Amino acid sequence: MRRLLAVLWLVGLVACGGGGGGGGPAPAPPSAEARLSGLGVSAGVLTPAFDPATVAYGVDVDAATATLAVTPTAMHAGATLTVAGAAAASGAASAPVALAVGDTDVVVEVTAEDGATRRSYTVAVHRPAPPPPAPLPSRMFSPFVDAGLWPILGALSDAVLDAEDVRHVHLGFVVENAWVALEPAWAGVYGVGSTDAVTGDAPFLAGIERVRAHGGDVAVSFGGAAGLELATAFQRAGKSAAELQAAYQAVIDRYALAYVDFDIEGFHVADTASVALRSAAIRGLQDAAAAAGRTLKVSLTLPVMPTGLDANGRAVLASALSAGVVLDAVNVMCMDYGAGTADMGKAAIDAGEALVAQLRVLVPSLDRAAACRLVGLTPMIGINDTAPETFTLEDAAEVLAWADTNEIRMLSMWSFQRDHPGTGLSSTASGLAQDDFAFTRLFAPFAR
Image 1 (tube, one colour):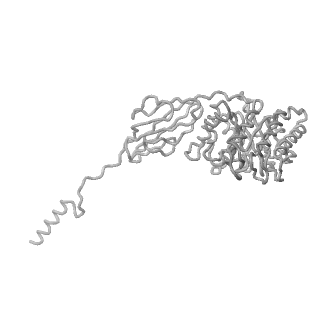
Image 2 (image 1 turned 90 degrees about the vertical axis):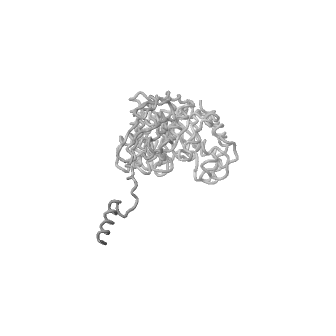
Image 3 (image 1 turned 135 degrees about the vertical axis):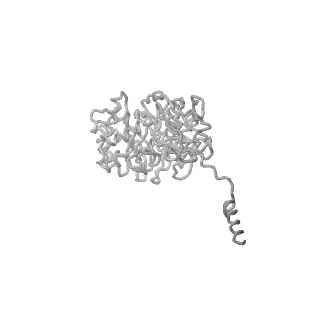
């Protein structure tokens, strides 16, 4: 009898599902829903109107719109999203996507909760070509803007451009990308052409367009005191002048540039192999522009003493001229002489006069007026890195008078972001008791 009861108990246990308890419904399988329930754009109008079943759309934006954010909303909460290859949150604006002139396809990828089902939505964005850059004046005021400072190109806001009447700037510097060999990047960090939300170049594209929207234009400067200038990087890698030219050309094409500058200083100025490679590449850039019916203006920015360019600086200049480069300006950095110079205004003027004489030796056909039309002066406003050198507003007035009388090509300064009052050496202040943008307001009327 006991055995029969035990058997009956086991039969009942099995019938009830065993000793695990529960007995609820099995969990639902992961969703295969890969549609969007909404899609928005930060500029223009989506055409046709959004429908979850429609996967192709068009958007027209104006020439000044350099970036576009997309706001996708997933139909199912478990789906994941990417916009232009970067992860995006449902119902939130994506990172700005840089827009080329012409057509840019922005792809929104939806991956269902099951990890296998996918659907792509494409937004074809059309951006017309901007109007041609404003003609350069015969005399330029083009202050350097430090592209490595945060917020990126924040100094070039609409309010500042309006108030200070700045129409041309030198943006520096583009060097080798610290993370991707032989690729150009702003300050070695922000990749030219990259759409990455953190290390992409969307803020630079937008800043350049802001200047152009105010009737001006920019020169992009390669090199500077920090990072590895592309010519040096390519020469060390055993690359050709044509390959270096292609890297520079990618930057020119990305920002539709009509003016580029090469700031050659530090050990780069004495590196004869990279100097020769750069000169050949620049000549190639100008030839390519001419073949396309355009003109590419080029300036060289070089270190200087009150006595003029040193032997290395003269060799850089001679290399460019020998390669057939047509120079718009030879811009000298009137700063950090390292000799405790007291009268910085006179030192800058002496450097300008010495450069005029050196140009006439290198190019005997130049008369004084023609040589002056190739001269650019860039003082470091306020406190310089080399104590006790300080370039004051009085020095600036003296330099302006000389530049005006001699009809030189360009006045600049390092840097636009330093044109503010402050104390001590700083990247965002001159260290002087001055009004905001006092140097800019003094130099700006030089342009005409």
